[in-house]
Length: 78
Image 1 (cartoon, one colour):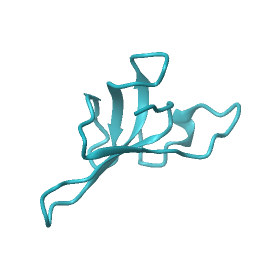
Image 2 (spheres, rainbow, N blue to C red):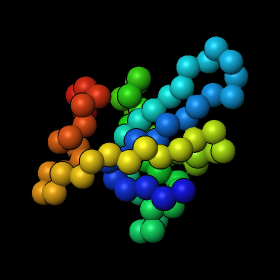
Image 3 (cartoon, rainbow, N blue to C red):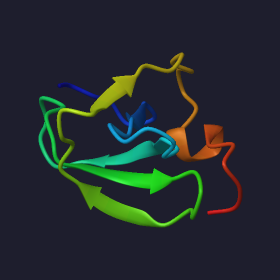
Image 4 (cartoon, rainbow, N blue to C red):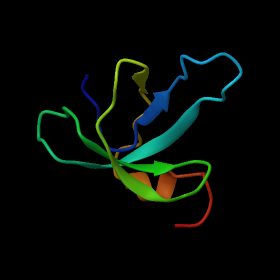
């Protein structure tokens, strides 16, 4: 799994009836984009360090050259 700042980490629940969780990747610990990731969750706006499991995937977002990812975040106030 590889990601860039601004991509979205989506965690799908293997349990039926449980909602999925997603959040913007706001920090990388490795230059190659490998986990773990600092994620700002869309439901709580909290930033946590995440080691994604097999139920997670990265959704790429359109790049906006010259615009920091934090200015593109639409999940609420920082």
